[in-house]
Length: 104
Ligand SMILES: [Zn+2]
Image 1 (cartoon, rainbow, N blue to C red):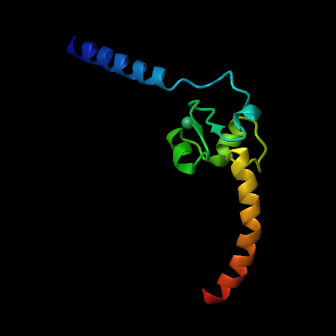
Image 2 (image 1 turned 90 degrees about the vertical axis):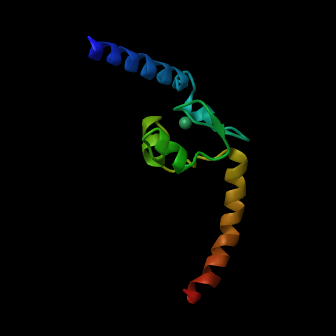
């Protein structure tokens, strides 16, 4: 008796938790990456960068996330504006790396 009650209370608790993190299932994965934001297809929240830390909350990593949502392997999980910035930085980074390596 008592056990059944406890179980049903636990059931109520977990069902409300599930409600708060509905998947944004009607979202097109390709449209999730916008100029100034990337939307997490798991929870529908918007970010500038979809971080590993966040994906771990969904039990995923970047590779698993891309696979799950049918994205190409090399799709960067950052908004478009940052993708462009990164590309610019990569060039200067490459020069910086060359200078840094001998010191290691
Ligand atoms: Zn999320």
